[in-house]
Image 1: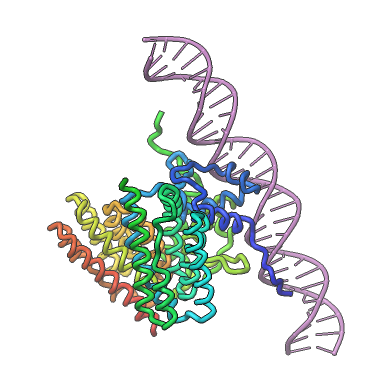
Image 2: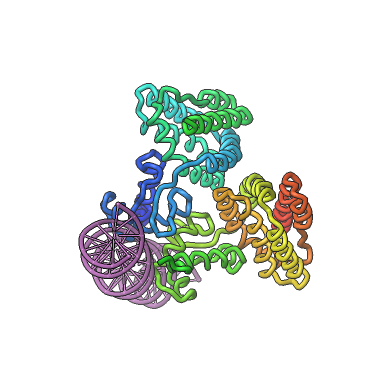
Length: 216
Length: 216
DNA sequence: TCAGCAATAATTTGATCAAAAGTTCAGGGC
DNA sequence: GCCCTGAACTTTTGATCAAATTATTGCTGA
């Protein structure tokens, strides 16, 4: 019999959980992490926690210091530049490809998510904003049928998640803008090139926001 | 007291070992892997083997099927295109940056490695070729002072390693050429743009080689 | 012959524990 | 005061084992 729910192993669940915590800024950059501590706060054993942490360090979301200490890495201008470069290669390409497979139902969903983004900005809900923004982008990227590119994009988001939270926390959501509308307009008429450009602009602007905040 | 040799944990050692096995084609694409089997062949316990495998799956070097089975993924045209795109963004950039930090000693080392490459090609030593070629590229990339880009490049090499081996095994090393000389010439005169272009050509040609082989 | 099904075998998974490694901090010598 | 030393404490690491899950085999009946 084929079960409807294929039971996920716990280390997978923990991985996803911690991944979200990193993406949505539950950790401060530079914050040290212990395997025990994590296992305890999540309420699980140490073995699956270990495996989840290994995966996340492999993805660059966490770093292991030479002392075996684990922490969430802080962003620097130097690292930001590298992330920039790859994001601007990968994500517009994903958007471009997504445009070819985007169905009315997807546009509906994307509109819903974009409204959530705007709403969170207005209310000043940072966590909500980060979450909705992530979901908007990765629902789009999920349409692209490009696993490898999408996974690379995810590792890059994992690297900037903690810092984004800090920046938003410092300057609030008031100054946040995006190019989701342009992307949606382009998607509606199936214009891949325009979708690509909208996402590229979205990224450029987002990174610029982070960069400016760090210069102060 | 600060020890000269900081003892690496075993899971780290195993990770590096299996990584090399993948990079240099000791696994056939599609080959299933068991955690027990790996631990046994390496001659170690199952716990560190597990962690090493998690890291490698996180890097895309291995995939876990829905049945929890683990295997080394086969390349397809679809995946190759994605890898292409990112490699051509990341690796020429690494080469470019490396040119700025390249010292005479580094050029010496790169020359040595390039000779090893040529030698392996002439003798038909596939494993030797794969190893020397990897070392040439990543010694160069190591000069770039760009951790993030280098790590991304590594995950991409991990994805094509097994297939490269198959292709070389099928068509021999006779048809292999590269653009290492051009890169070295450019590095000697500190010409970053030329170095970048040489590496870009090297990648384009390598990928074309794989692609052609797969079309037959 | 072959599908269906139960029993067996193999593997993964997660908890637990001992050993190794690292950190912290109090106390003593300069 | 300041730095070193070492003991107590914390954390990571790897082995082991039991439970859960999945694959495989062999059997039965049409």
